[in-house]
Amino acid sequence: MKHTGRFGTYGGFYVPEVLMPALEELEDAFYRFYQDEQFSQELKQLLKSYAGRPTPLYYAKRFSEQVGFKVYLKREDLLHGGAHKMNNTLGQGLLAKYMGKSKLIAETGAGQHGLATAMVGSLFGFDTKVFMGSTDIVRQSVNVHKMKLCGAEVIEVEGGTGTLKDAINEALRYWTSTVSDTFYLFGSVCGPHPYPTIVREFQTCIGKETKAQCLEQLGRLPDLIVACVGGGSNAIGIFSSFIDDKDVRLIGVEAGGKGIKTREHAATLLKGKVGILHGAKSYLLQDEEGQIYETESVSAGLDYPGVGPEHCLLKDSGRAEYVAAEDTDVLDAFELLCKTEGILPALESSHALAYLRSQKGKLDGEAIVVVNLSGRGDKDVGIVEQCRPAG
Ligand SMILES: *Cc1c(COP(=O)(O)O)cnc(C)c1O
Image 1 (tube, rainbow, N blue to C red):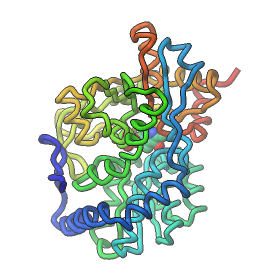
Image 2: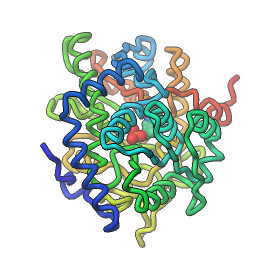
Image 3: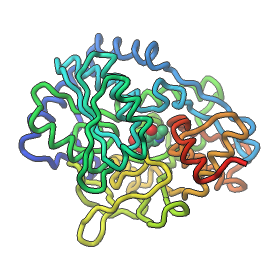
């Protein structure tokens, strides 16, 4: 079952020579422990008692009435830490422990992955460093504080534009000199092989649970599955169990930006061109010279100029469809879920909800749609307040 690291022509292993042994060690360890009974049991137990799995599949009745078809929410917002990130950080954290590493490093943009890593770092007693761009440190100061409370050191990255892309560059650079005792805990289904495969596997619990819950609660599979796409991990997590069920449409929603900020550098799969970033080949937001654009979105968690290689393949094959949601529609969808259900979704997840609103009158009233509600919106209340002062 060992994966080649290629999804069609995408993915791969484009890293400096010094990182090759570390990635090979990681790949070997992953395949050894992921199938190991003790490792599986320990992870299963932690996902249950520490993180709160299984998460519910909830029928959003009043939201459904507004859009005109049946909407079920996969409640990853209820997971410890407030987002699906914990599935991956628990898995990789445990892997680091089994590999005998003593230190964790991670990159973070909005701070959600950094926080989930800091939590797991303190759970397992690792020395944890989180690399974060200087711009993001200012924008996401609450998460910086939370990471420090959990005992992590937050390392400010000054280069570039001080965002996620720069944090990943710096974390990779730091890793080259510390590989012997340090585990790089990567946050999404991007980066060099084996990360897209490892992160995917640790997020498949979302799809497996969803499928079982659909069969139990609805007696059938859904017609549509919708998830937001930044790097692509929550989307792959829920899509993975349904890829062979050809009657289930898979829809990924990217950040379309606009409205709130002025530039249009958004929607990687829709507008990007193939290139290499952070060790992998994928669609990228880049100019004619191959310079990477800065993405622009109301939700920091979707601000990444690349996208996971498996999504690139799913797009080319047509198995999954990708669309973009613009900021104003995202905010409308955020408000609608708050008003109809009393659930505050993350702005990232609100992209998926915005797609549902756009389908009003287009989908059959009996259609069943499952949305991966990837995270909760508490972290975004300040941004929403700035854009839409509450009346
Ligand atoms: C980080 C994050 C995302 C984007 O990451 P993916 O890898 O695309 O899932 C989406 N939603 C929430 C709540 C996040 O924290």
